[in-house]
Length: 404
Image 1 (cartoon, rainbow, N blue to C red):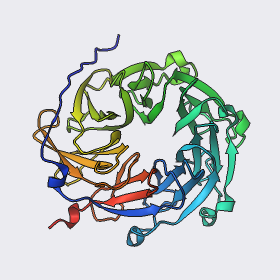
Image 2: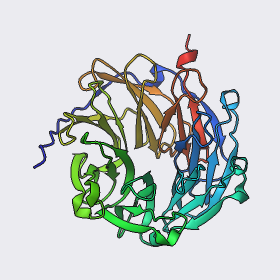
Image 3: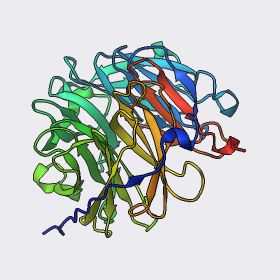
């Protein structure tokens, strides 16, 4: 029997207003060539040690890659290429499916399209930014099965290279995985293995939650009677049977769970889970031991003025040795802020959390936030997308290193 999950709720004290704790960060545009940029997924596609970006543009119907131009040109628009055209896009992620050394892209589509597409990269590095050199192929077993929301490349069965874990939303939505065939380019040979029904999959993360040496699945479900954050225990060789993947509760059950992040917030050596919850709350799901079955839940109310909570990320923003929180919002019409960061004084559980501006009243609907030192100055910048006012793929420059 699983250990009982302890639920200890706190409303964290929030100090002065964000405006009293600094100015908004400077925004730089990476790509604003289409409409409805919906999330960033990162990888180093050319081996230069710098992060590159895959993004699906929901309203524009294009899948695009942006390649980091180097620190000297990072504040300019990045070299970019359209690798495929798909309607109703929700997600795009890098993965070398055929092990040829070139990073392909897998995209997910919802709406009427209801498809997963593989965008095969050209083998020659010199052709990587040539749109006509890419080839798009639908994954037949995924077509019209559900509205697809998110995909995670992961080797599940130990055969034929990387598999794909994915999930969707709406009627018949589920979380499951696609088994890669002997030849991954034979799209018709991929097979689907359902693990669990979902209402609206948000996050999907690979992590060894029970410290047994294999990779488990961590996810958040936004809608339905089983909404919340959970993890599925990897059963090893019995991975084709849904009942073999034992489910464990993290927290937020029955709430509208958005994106989550795994990080050790309090520095105790155990990875916690941070969960954004609609409308205006962050749950710190604090791990109690290494089994992954005992958690405490601490609630942090979002400061005002902000929109509706979307995602949360963890990093040391001000370089004081403590982990801070960066969160993003949708429905952030002015005077609401779409991005803020939070620092604490004392301890994460009982101290005072202070809000700081990040985006200010810049944009309305932001998405996942990646904390990366893009300009090479030693502090963490914030990369995201904004799809309502079409700011596109953007990053905000951390002013910490420039402070007097």
